[in-house]
Length: 272
Figure (tube, rainbow, N blue to C red):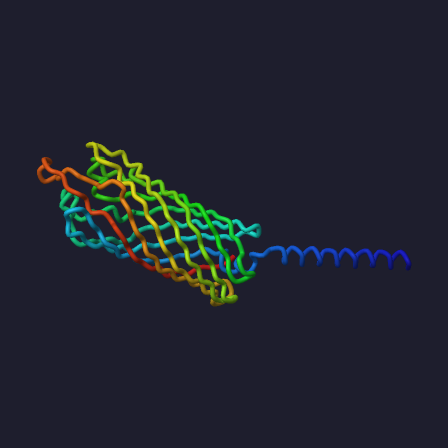
């Protein structure tokens, strides 16, 4: 009986130790509250509207609609990752033709991109326990360059070789109100480096872009999560895009390019 008592005592101590370790691990994971929102995958639909401009031109506007697939994860150690793939489903602009590249009709401006894939990786710093968190990150992406300037400059319509390498940095400030509501402000700056094989001595359509994004997540029922975003983009081309006028091939014109845009997106997804 004494041996049995000793055995039960040892088992009891082992159970207490296991509970202590488990509790300690949970307490040491200071990201658990944010993981309720930042471990998710979702499908979204968004719209963008922006301005086109060129020196000596009256400019124009464009509109685009895109579908979006996102996978996000905040790890126990504080590493944050977000992978975002998108596909444009429609695009139109006014004027429908860019005088610099009339040959290609309505496929004008340096937008849209057929689609792309972008990844962000960063490290989260909790500022206020379970409420406020700051995440600096780096970004890398591959985005299709679909513009009549590029199509004319490469004299081919094979878009698989017309793409941007996108890289940059950013930071996200996240505020968790409770188990249901989460809000975040994301600011980044990227450089889009065109890989299109340009000819005719034309410059690459490289540009800088910075984005300010305000988003919200709502854990509405069990693992169901709804999301909403609004954003503002600003574009800067260090080199003006000048194209040979295909109407005469004896003069040059400045190409319409995006200068700014605003947009929004709604999404539905699941946490995991």
